[in-house]
Image (tube, rainbow, N blue to C red; front, side, top):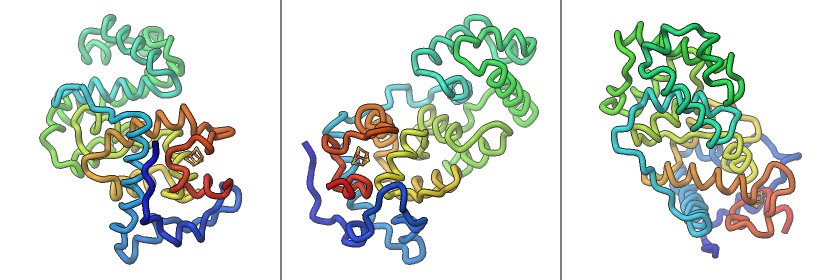
Length: 259
Ligand code: SF4
């Protein structure tokens, strides 16, 4: 069941657009100069609320101080494969190499063979070893637990400094392991937010992360992230989205063009 909002902005209705003829101007960019962001938080709150009514309110069940380096490697392994497959690959990696030092000492080909079932094995093995090497050079030890105690901005800046680590990996590591308010965007989330009108049609990865970090309510980073992925799999599919069943159609520029 959806919750209707009396606050849907008239500009959004006036500017309703589909994916083909969408102008670059966006709700988020529109509000930047005037600081009018609070008005935008109202529909966003309703979007989050309707998604929670449909998909539940997911909670981060990892411990409050999960290991950020484990998480970073898990996120690298999760690229372009299913959750089940990447969990299996990570388990195989930990079984073969009990410590990160052992991973760093191993031949890259051995590491790639160990994670082969997760796909893109050569590429992922190279990234993992390169990141571990950089961490050891910078920290002196293969340990990122200090990230828990850094302010969010500093933690983001630190992880972003590594070669091969993009904004999504940084955000997933900090949100999942450290419970910091950093919003990760994957392909499902990009697609939905563009259709809804919360992101421009053309927007860099880094810019999109920055924009969402500014507007997602503090207590909703995890729930909104997980539910957008659920929504992208269930209804807002890449092709033929099921807008007629969608709990947020009222707030979606693309959905409004179909009504
Ligand atoms: S209305 Fe359609 S395009 Fe918009 S979020 Fe819902 S399923 Fe996706």
